Image 1: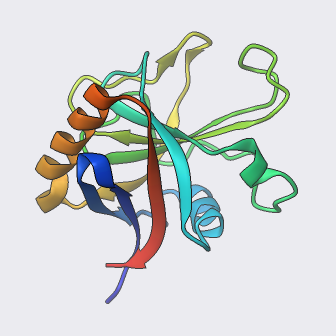
Image 2: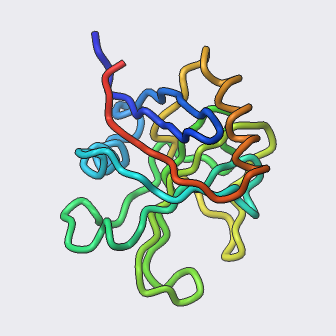
Length: 162
């Protein structure tokens, strides 16, 4: 049986992995990602500053303006300590972070041990919405390490069936 998944690529680092969605554990968050990724998206990726081994992929506010799916998300399959291979969707309400008038939706690609969802605004539980296939996690970690060394990049996300 095919399962919905996200293909995550970034050519400079040779990142190319599949993360299986977890709609049974994070239904609203998975539905958000499936709606957002109805067409492939290119989002900025940068190594996180506070959360440890994570490539942070904030969804551009312009991608969310006027979209019915861009609503507050509950914490589902919540974690404060993501594990290697976890894809975590974090939601920050408007004005919570430095008065930013826009809600923040961030897709976190967690690739190593020791990650934590501690931000300047405090602890913020995120939803584990997908997981990189176990047989691709070594390549995932290696590619994310390249992104860490190279700096900002563009990450392509697309829906696939796995």
